[in-house]
Length: 269
Image (tube, rainbow, N blue to C red; front, side, top):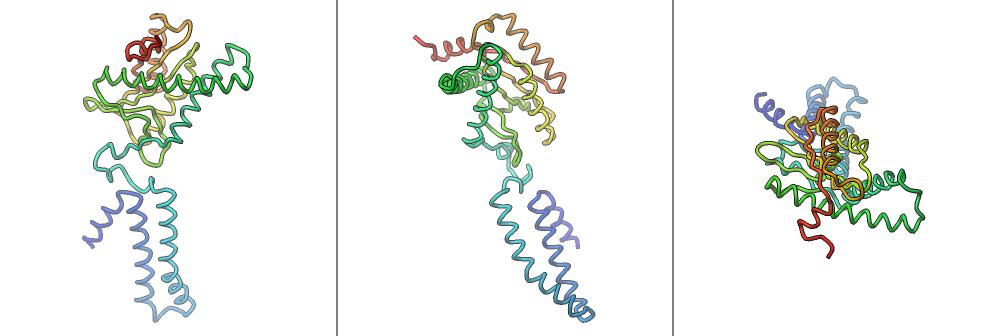
């Protein structure tokens, strides 16, 4: 019993072990009942138990095949990984593309308030232009943050297995975890969208009991009326207040795209 208790304790540490433990117990109890009480059972009961013992292994095989092929990321716990890096997966190209497309849509919705709806051809052209601007803004913001914090940032990652917790980046410095979210802003800042993003991040990280972390919210500005120091300081203060309302420690970083282009050699000449 002591050996079984130790084995059960080890198996119960992750979903895969719990499933295996349950299967062993069910199959073992059914076999024990048939072996010990076989003489006192009715024929109909024996038939049911025999069929169960014969069919159960194939049912388990089918169930495991389905789990491994469709939901393999949900069968492990954080303790199964040797370090925290193993508990962070890189977003697939499809997931990264979806995130960029969502940001493009957010920018276009913000622009609708400033101008009339463009034609279909203009809209398609703007989609590609906005996507290029977002990608460039993220790349330059990552470079600036890596310089400021003297770290290498894990980009486009998902924290944990089996949950859609895609974020732009994360890193650990001095035993402090930093979650990086970068937003490209053109002409107008949509603080409601920023608040929604912060809420999603905080809610999902709570599922993993993350407590000692900060969110670096980097805004990359481009457009008229967004380049004054007063507006940059006001934007930082609003982000901090949004974080305080959500119970999240936010470190705002506001960059000007033209300055980043000049600094990293992307400025047009």
